[in-house]
View 1: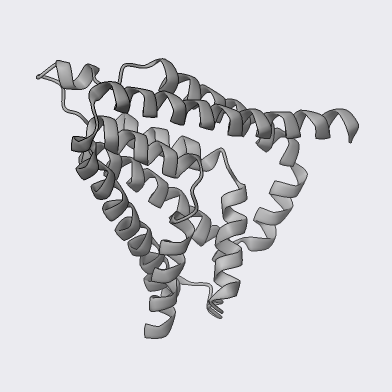
View 2: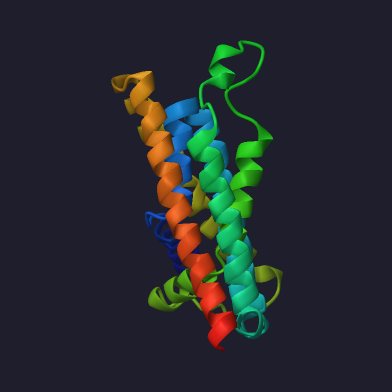
Length: 209
């Protein structure tokens, strides 16, 4: 069990590491609003990774069938969500909270935004499944005895996002406000492109299926 817990921790680390929309979002939040905002966003990502891990262990066959049956809708809806997220990042003022001393530089919106972004990309569950296979992590029991493994995955993800957001919140002092603003806009544009690619793929499949 100890070995499985260690493997679960590594799965959580590796699942968070790829540079995708989630990492860009956490980076932008950390640079513009600080460590708390970035880490809270990372915790939203951890929730989706944990959810996908539970699905991978308990309901893999059901999840694969659901994704296969609704792939076009999921990609199209997910693309729209990611595009909207990118638009918000491009046009919002990331320093509004900093100007208003009565408003903290982080909020539950950061957490919920990350969850929405994670759930809009069901391909993430395939990454979790691949990592489980890579590390040879396949718990035989399908009951509460696998809870330590799931918690280990969550711990790995939390650890990654804590230090990821801490790093970018520290180096924000080396940037001018205008530079951080443009980093946020460029990050938003990149996320919009990713969303457009998902949306286009979904539409192409629906038209030429």
